[in-house]
View 1 (cartoon, rainbow, N blue to C red):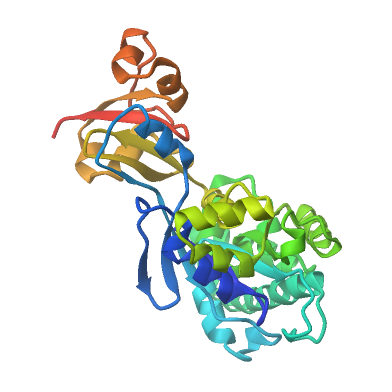
View 2 (cartoon, one colour):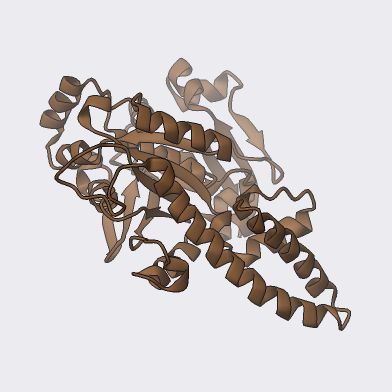
Length: 363
């Protein structure tokens, strides 16, 4: 699962990406790796890992990882191939969610591509290009589906019906993600179409240092727009975060205190992006490592076990589960077991975020 960072030129998108994908966001226990140019993997900060280590001694901590793609900047006409439009659209089609960086600060030394700062106009520019590209895709796919549907093909008829609903919505100037489908089969069909405007969006308001909480008028306009679209907003000062990412732990803590932050805003952003993708974590803990494993929300016990090894799912017997709160209260796994708080769950168990698990399997 990947999140793509998008935005107009000169909104701070690359500054934010570089800060996120520097090792500075995490401690020495949080690995970072660059997969290829403009693609990075970052640790998801999770204080629960440290809490677990306070009760279970382990050689190392391994956090969950979030993959990010720094997508080429967009300009008006991208849907027609202007600028790097084709590259932008290809990359955004391949990600699962969008982090839309919006400029919410004034700076005479940083030229805005449209001449003046207007975050709502910027949001509309990108949304419009995505919807125009989707309309082109709908027209192409609709004609093909209609021809096949005339032969009586049931899948083609279903596909055509979904495409017509998407076309009607896009014609109203609304993104595909606003389409409400109750039929699970239609939902699956829509997901397979990979429309650009169907991606979930988190708006990242890039602010100045005097508005770190995002209370200024520009950010409030973005919040209002996001609320109308069912989205969320995270305020981040990309310039400050870039500076923080280059400091050692002690200097970073001092700088955070001086600006009134408890942690880098990038940590908040990373966690928000993780949940935007529909992901959650469970933990395994032992003397060699304490590790956060990434699973989709709603995953069952066997599905969660499979991310460790496919054999774990195939030979799943049961899962022994407790919570971090149980560990805080009772101090040891032995005490948790003796208190009857260690839950034994079977194949139908739906994992909860933050479960600490031992899987039992036989292959």
